[in-house]
Image (cartoon, rainbow, N blue to C red):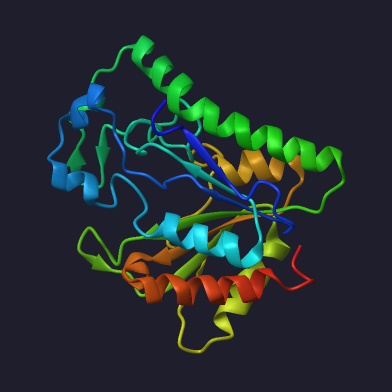
Length: 245
């Protein structure tokens, strides 16, 4: 497939941190006719996490960390949602109707799971299982971004740390970021991890006993190369500490 459903960067990286960017791409194959959306809609947050892939790639380089990037838009199928969840193949994203996702047949849903979701998850699962079997210390970090304004409400956070079972990891990330008095950092904000709505943290992390969290950075802070570099430097300094889980 072009692009592939998963791109692996620096698979042999020496860092204990494994980076996952589930919403790295806004690509939709021509066969799906843009899901009936205006091309401008595919540049919006509804189609991908703007700036997240650039941040993840730079963080991978700074940490010498393995990185997994999705190859297709989350509007086709979301790689951070369990199959069958209401938001796995969204009928509406924020306030935008997704015409190409209405009244899908079971065959089409199964095709999307097989083409875009399963290869991404299987590659990560195999990689993590091999690390566990080899006794390698591992921490999972999902890399995401969020909109400065959601349904007319301005968000004050610069970043948020999302976690469930890995409370030590979540608290250390949160507190390290909050050590900068200029930053407003959410604790399980602007979103929360839910078993029926999330995949990376509960499935790849918590179920394996691997500390796992997501970092959410506000998109306007990743709008330039300098912004990406600043956030990558900040996160690398935190994640590179020996006392991180």
